[in-house]
Image 1 (cartoon, helix red, strand yellow):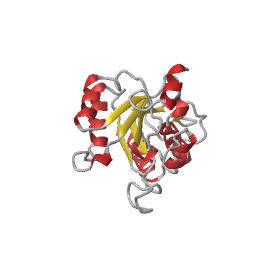
Image 2 (cartoon, rainbow, N blue to C red):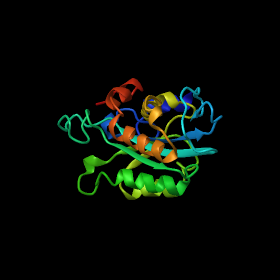
Image 3 (cartoon, rainbow, N blue to C red):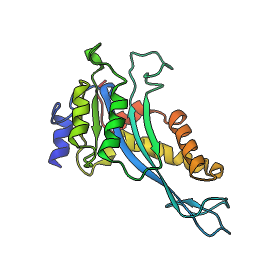
Image 4 (cartoon, rainbow, N blue to C red):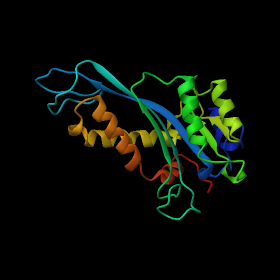
Length: 215
């Protein structure tokens, strides 16, 4: 509780009080499983009821997705990349199990290379993520520092404070809607990538919902 209070009431590096939400990038990872079931009845993602027959591979297969989102910049015209109506979304979709510190470091470098702080100090971003060991690895923090950006962890056990968690939910909901299109792990990967590119919406409203009220 004290860690959460500090997060909301103190400036960086203890918290994010007073920091514009357009300067924040929220990142996390999640997994999607494709499990085999009785061939007479079909297959479904883990946690969902089997509803439709399908010709899927046997066994258990998994996608690992690292996702990062921003709220968008109100100074950028509507429709342009990086605007409130079209915020940047970064993703790494792979069949590799889990997320190592090295994989997360490479992803963080890809995300933060979007903004050149040397050319414009106003491009400095603050990366926020949870307390997973791979997130807190020294090489990850060094990659952030080298690029002139900052990083801070969410309070422990407070996923409701992470806008990216709601973006992940959008991905899962849209995947359910398109489940009849899934034939195997490769088609699921393609559909997930399409959803991430086209169907993650209203991130500025989501940041506001999570409590990031500063413009």
